[in-house]
Amino acid sequence: MNKAERIQKIFEILSSEGNASTKYLAEALGVSEATIRRDLINLSQENTFPFQRVRGGVIYSLEKSGVEPMFDLKLSQMVDEKKKIAKMALDLIEDGDSLFLDSGTTIYYLAKIIGSKKGLKVVTVDVKVAAELAKHPNIKTILAGGEVRSGYYSIGGDDTVNFLKQFRVEKAFLATDGWNIDGTFNSSNFEVGIKRKMIELSKKRYLLADHTKYGKDAFIKVSDLDVFDAIIMDVPLSDDIVSRLKDKGISIIF
Image (cartoon, rainbow, N blue to C red; front, top):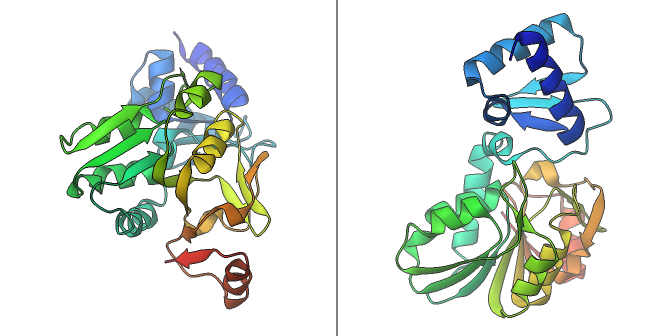
């Protein structure tokens, strides 16, 4: 594949997906990540295509501000904040708990440190999260069946929703693309049914969201906020927002 063909393919992927990591583009085009980086540098210098380079990849910027970044791209963003949230979430987990773990990079960072707990039974809808959980013999890991979303590693579809119906868990930890006082939102409808089913089938629900997610909405509303027992964040919110959340019975953990 020559340079012109690579550029055309990159444009097609970004137009369709809205974003891509350097690794994803390299695998899709069958070239090295170094080659992709050079192509992206050349494109940015030419200013031909409406995209923005970010750490680890590229985002197509024409009317795509609400798009959900792919896993590898999100993994390199807000790392310290996500790890901080994961540690706070870990404090809410007790030995012997049964859990739902949603998809996403913040949940992934929780999965990386959850091995300190004993006797857990965990159902997840994320291939990357399951791989981390499977490293620990003291955790019973159940990976839901269904369609894997390319580039995101989440599992979804009607088969996945039906799979989840057989479980009842004590705690669910969910991620979000954005939230505000009106509810929590997702950029793609692929995971929405999964999130709603996890909320329905768990006794306690926790929303994990770094500060960049607050005050935003996205393509589709997942749920109202009052379904959550607490929202776990990396920084505090204003007293006014905290008060309004308390009126809804929701705690903020930061």
